[in-house]
Image (cartoon, rainbow over all chains, first blue to last red; front, side, top):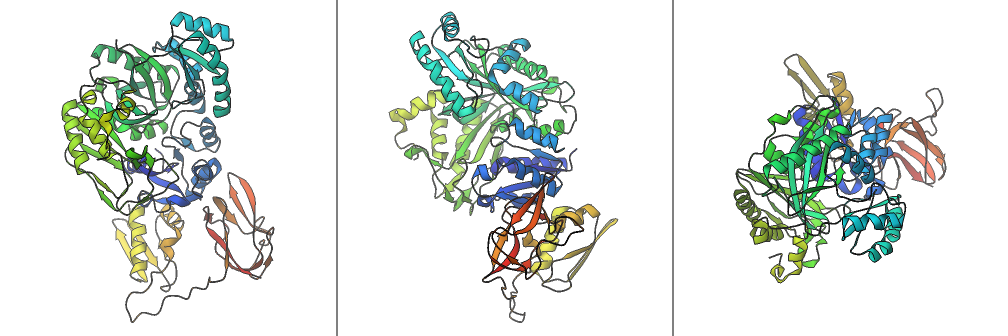
Amino acid sequence: MFKRILIANRGEIALRVIRACRELGVSPVCVYSVADRDGPWIEQADEAVCIGPAASKESYLRIERLIAAAEITGADAIHPGYGFLSENSHFAEVCRDCNISFIGPSPEAMNLLGDKVNCKRLARQSGTPVFPGTEGGIEDIDEAAKVANEIGYPVIIKASAGGGGRGMRVARSEAELRENVEKARQEALAAFGNGTVYVEKYLENARHFEVQTIGDNHGNAVHLFERDCSSQRRHQKLVEEAPSPGVDPAKRLKVCESAAALIRTANYCGAATVEFLMDKKQDFYMLEVNTRVQVEHPVTEMITGVDIVQTQIRVAAGEPLPIKQQDIHINGHAIEVRINAEDPDKNFMPQAGLIETFVAPGGPGVRLDSHARAGYRIPPNYDSMIGKLIVHGPTRAAAIARMRQALNEFKIGPLRTTIALHKRIMDNKEFQNADFDIHWVERWLKSNDTAGVSK
Amino acid sequence: MIDMRKLKELIRLMTANELLELDLRDKDEQVTIRRPNIHSAPQIMQAPAGLAQAVTMAPPAVAQPAAPTSPSKPAAPIDDTAGLIKIESPMVGTFYASASPDKPPFVSIGASVGPNSVVCLIEAMKIFNEINAGTTGTIEKILVKSGDAVEFGQAIFLVRPS
């Protein structure tokens, strides 16, 4: 096991990793930018090193400073968290070259699964269901048009190196396809440094179904079932839950096992999430693989009892997976809401500044993953998520009731947060009936129902 | 095993309460922390090796004496940094006062520096970086010694501007 882990991240995920380290008997070290000097999670670490000014690209993204911080504190491993450099294979490579263990996949596995075209090729090998579409990147527009005509419009043009909803264009006809392929290529080149684009069938009203997997260095990989993240706004998740409601158990098992097979085929060590879209017939189509721990990992932890962050650390240290597939079961239902310092009435404008009131909810089955507290000043330089509120209950209805009460108890002020918005979501009939798709939140926000959404 | 957090907390309490010596025994382990006077940083006299080394790299706040609270105590130390310019580390790494152990330091107290004067090296990832003064004046104080870990923004020299 590692002696000391440097956490190359901040906020709630830094606190999460600190907690996992403590339970494993590993010493945690934090890094912080000048803007995070008073970050409440830092006092929980054994050492802390200032790595730069406020801007992420001058601090949390500065590879040489992270490595130097690991060197001067004697850290033998780095946990990248999510975002920042967590899916940067160059960073993983530098860690390896400097004899520091990167808690995540090898650069090779990361590149293989992180590139959508290569990943799709591998998925076909491992039996993981994919969208019908072009075999690889589009070389020739006529070839793309032929494939699109075969699979049927609408289709979507995607950047191989893209992600998080960026670098995608929908085409509903051959004319639109021809018009958009070259534009998409230019955008991809500018945004991701890689102009490779491909074409896939586009599902209009699907649900977002993602499977949590973990692999080790001994050829094993398991799945921890799925999360449903259909409640999104502008490709950012608002609410996540596990398991995905109303899914046929046999179909669930088949797609989850196919996700584990993909990770196994890629010789992947670490946590990975295989994202799918699920159509109304409960057929699944792989979107992409996220080669890191995800924000919403807690809902999976609540239904399976597996500590995902501890397991990441253990497999990175060379241990075999501490759990077997036959011992992983779905127990009850979990829901997570992301608490963002944003004003939903002002187009979700981010709120920075001092938190004066912070009253956390509690009770059975209530979990709060947050670095915030009364007296904490939210810096304006980073994303607006200040915490995650997670509940677990024996059924989905019980979990919703539990979440409603927890949101009623949760008081943050004076700045605006998405707490009130989440209360409205818990009261929403589409959400309660799980009669939704990935565009439901945006449709609902546009409708009259959301007048005074913050109240 | 005496854990790191407890040790740091003991040092903090010592400093805050102006204790000069603390001797702690725990089963077969012993830690003695002693300060010659209330203005000195605590020295760990005896502790498991890794622990002592790790604690000396603790954030500077631990080593600062607390301001006295009772009226019979002497006044707080005079702030002798007024009017001085700090040279701050622009990077994370290990500080070296000279180009190599057998060479003299780049600067000593009283040395004149200009913006491009090399004042020290900071090493990271096996690369030694020359650090420039970035200001004009004379070296008044050297705040770190060779082999010390430094972080971004940490003051390493105080310069009296000319």
